[in-house]
Image 1 (tube, rainbow, N blue to C red):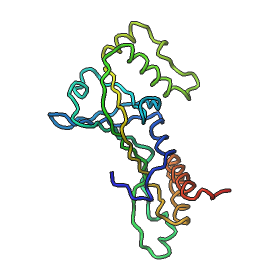
Image 2: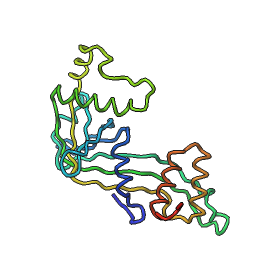
Image 3: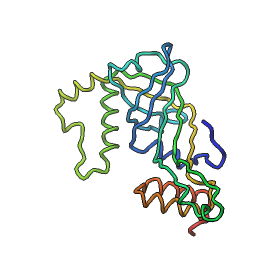
Length: 214
């Protein structure tokens, strides 16, 4: 991934991308070409040097049964939004501004391991469910469904584990703009309802200048 120095993601931003309840694209190269699936994942930092990502695929999905050639890739995405040049203070000063797109992303590489094991899968779906139900007023649990029904559902999927070898993170969040332009970006994003993107821009500015706000 092309990462200019001022857009390199810090450890905190990478950790947030890995741990946030979200879906990501699993991409593998096989003897028959590239395969990709969007799927929810759970990050386990305790496995190996860099941790692991756990997910599951439908048993009918050929991606799990086609051997991966080389490393597999997971593309994780944070909030993203269009940035209008009309939001920049510098538009009124000199007009030399153009639109762009803000985003946060991590490319996570590693070895793909298949888990066709009901015990592994049962533990995985409970962790995945708990992660995504954590903020619910009345969280649903796997055990709320009949045991035989859950067993049947587990037979229809196969577990996948990406043993992480390296991570490339990028946060393109207006770090190359002046403080006045960043103020305009934050206001513009909030005005459009993109509060998560506005929060990311504010965080990137704080990380760029740690003494700000003291």
